[in-house]
Length: 327
Picture 1 (spheres, rainbow, N blue to C red):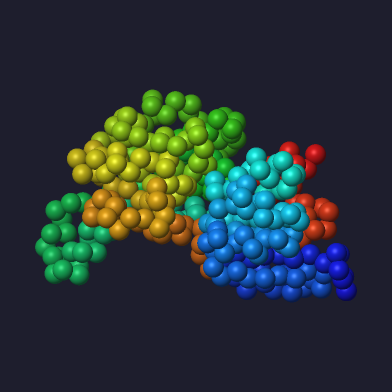
Picture 2: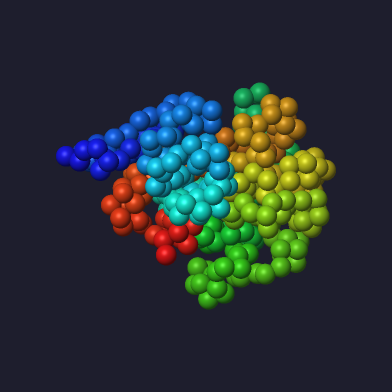
């Protein structure tokens, strides 16, 4: 059994499914502490002797790193990392690791659910049944996905799986992603496009799967949403801020867009007075696209295995965001 300085400590911030704890328990050289209060002020005093930290939505920036003198790795319980200050980690050559494909299928399935629920006017038709309004069922007919066109924005781990499912639904799929070759997109059964503004008037659906970055913030704003095909649907399971909520609200209330599905919002938890909440043609979920029972277990195991790979001197490079720290 390792003792003294050879032992390592993992600080688990917030929830950690038992599947991840079980992996930790297989190691007699690693201790762990669970911090249920995931607010930043509670985090700082616990970081002083932590060699690794697992994070949900808790930010980790320069101040947190300054409180963590022996930190070796920061592990996200998920794939997003916009709340982590990567340049600060790079200065100390600390890898930031995500859980790779652990929840990719789950998010892709959720995107399909939102596409279907929006196209099928599910909230309205659910209301017709519950409010004894059966006679209104033919007043507003839903739409098929088959033979419709869709733009998938971003064809990474999640977007590629969404493309696969859209192709299976007999949709005409277009992909906007400068990092994926035309050959790979064609192999997936889709068509590569390079001009967002040129393709928007032509597609019936848009599904957003790109990372949040300076280039993608406000990508769907009043101008670009205004270019979308009348009666189109917009789904965002990526990050809040990529779709401008005011512009989306205007398009949904004016009839420019027929519906939308949002798993992410500008502010989370959101303001209860958010105007979108009053619209029946919006399907909402609380940033849960990638948090199924199965995905939670996969992410927990992946996050802990990422940490252990660093402790063992063999970091899983595929899951390292800032790969420059490995050289």
